[in-house]
Amino acid sequence: MNILGINFAGIHESSACLLQDGKLVFACAEERISRIKQDKSFPKLAIQAALDFAGIKASDVDHVAFSFPHAWQISKHELKLMLSGHFPVSAARVEMWTLGVLKAIRHKGGELDYLRAFAPPRSGFHLADHHLCHALSAYCMSGFDEAAVLVIDGRGAHEATTLWKAQGETVKLLENYDYPNSIGVFYAGITDMLGFEPFSDEWKVMGLAAYGKPTVDISKLLRCTEDSYTVEGRRFFGNKPGDRSKLEEVLGPRRREDEELVQKHMDLAYAGQAGCEQAMLAMLRRVSKLTGSRKLCLAGGVALNCKANGELLRAGLIDDIYVQPAAGDDGTCIGAALSVYSDLNLPLPRNPTGHSYLGHEFSNEQVEKVLKIFKLPYTPVANASKTAAELLAKDRLVGWYQGRMEFGPRALGNRSILSNPKFRENTDRVNEAVKFREGWRPFAPSVVHEKAHLYFDDFYNSPYMILSFWANKERATEIPAVIHVDGSSRVQSVKRETNPRYYDLMIEFEKLTGTPMVMNTSFNLKGEAIVCSPRDAVQTFYTSGLDDLVIGDFLVSKTPAL
Picture (tube, rainbow, N blue to C red):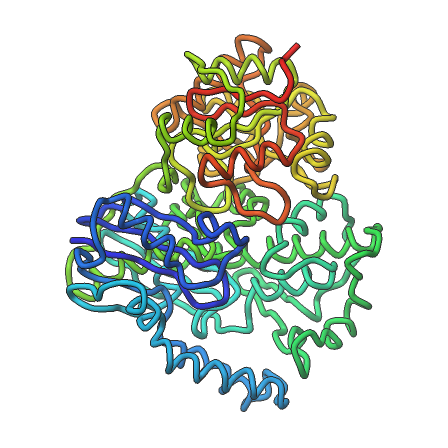
């Protein structure tokens, strides 16, 4: 049975996946192929890529499932909020609401868009509950037989946070926090007040928070008890789009994009991060109490906050955690596909992949063809892992392009920029010469799994770079480029069976330097999507300060290594 899962709501990045007989075989965000960062358009390219990967046609698809209910449900909740006074009633907001209703009727949740591009599925379309899609995507991919499940994001149709009990083939909703009582809305508001792009630049707040101090009172925006939270949603919505007056009453004027970051901004970031962690811990206490489980599955956009995730693990309430690597809305395409089984009264499939390498792959022949088209000098290499390790040991900045592309926002060793973690100045080199981003933002380590506990005191298996740990103080001086100012580190642990070529690179690097890890960041420039094709990799390589590109079994260098 072929099931296409699709995330498309015109709000966040769109995506598509393919489930074949209950197994996830392909998943990709539209942005990777269209090259439009956070592309929200209907994922026609991602759908076609999924079909091409499996060697099937649209007419071979049995079911197509979307990860949102009919948009009328969303519009109905917004109307309720306006009538109850949660949202200010203005001409601009009523116009937005009306346009939303008309779009819902016209697009039928994406069905019309699909039929414009592809043949109809054999057995029809499905519209799934958004938070159920998040929950299924986490639990069914976790490998757990039972678990508590937390979904925390900005909003679904009406929900913002949901608590679930998963056991066997059943996932049951326990409690719901309605939008705009939303941790995601709270964090997006802090992001906006700091002059960043909300629902996009939350990473910046998380990084900036490490420089802050507890001086900002946010109790008028967020209040937490032992096992609950309340976001004062009314504060986050003005009379028209872009009106921040109610937030500015509490936090003062919004920082301008061109305004220098000073201590008060760092303190606000600290308050936002601390509030997020407190609210998530309250939800963990609540769901643990309701389920009695010591295993946690986590999804939703807020679940991408690796620092908060680390605090959940350190709270002593759980023994195991699985955070969906594509925890944002792109990952809900997986849950949408899985939800079809419930619609058909079939057993819920649980076939965890154990990795997120679910996208495109290009052969050496395809890579070499691109290198020849660009008329580039290149060298075939017998051992790509050893070649890259030797370059990194010479403190070169290396583009590393191998195997299948990762699904989710993290580059996990197949579409990565690598550097030597032993030199603190490499963070500045990569920020200034490659990523062209703010110098205070940290970089992450990829580390040989068996050696990770030597460098991180509270280490737990972390294949998706979505958990934060405290660095061992004695070892931290060995790897200054991947330790944040507060002593934390966002770690990816790599096992040979998951990614043998990347694992061997770090083994070879350890032979040369004594350190079994590298500094890893995504292979893209600021404002661009992570590279997908060999052409993308070559273009990014030559428009950045990278020294070398190890692409498949070929090496391209701008200048010879000394």
